[in-house]
Image 1 (cartoon, rainbow, N blue to C red):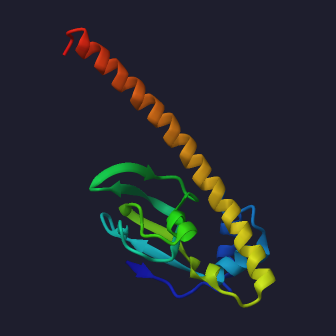
Image 2: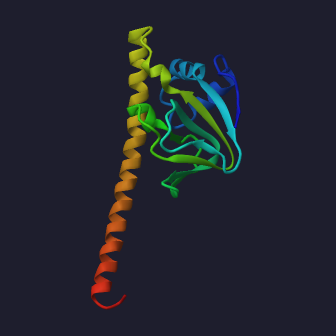
Image 3: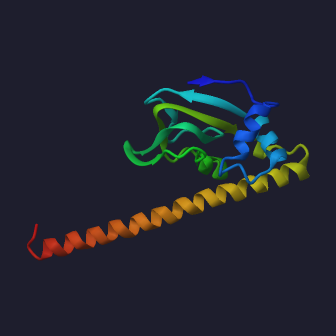
Length: 171
């Protein structure tokens, strides 16, 4: 992994972040706060970005490349769209990573240090910022849950079909 210093004051990234689906709705003030807490991380093909069952406080926004999500050694999903996020579950509940994330090809991410969400300095401003981020996280998690529900329904239908065929002597 190659990592930049923290990005506070990096105005060149501000416009790019404002165009991303995940961060664009925040507005310039909050994006500047995020830059203060962020680094650019570059990963080589096959490099582990986050490891299942470990603890850390980083949320990632995909800038380029792609990643695969691996649970118990099996790939369960891929993230290929610029602006998509991963790592938000650990930031929400403070628990260990639920899956590993591995770079596919050369991959560049914005890494946001979410440990700031536990800070108490400037309590009102902090609470507003954190509440906006949690709303964004909730939208990401809701979309993923909807997709998972659809996939689960398809898998159950396939399983029922296989069971019927087996009972009918097909297998």
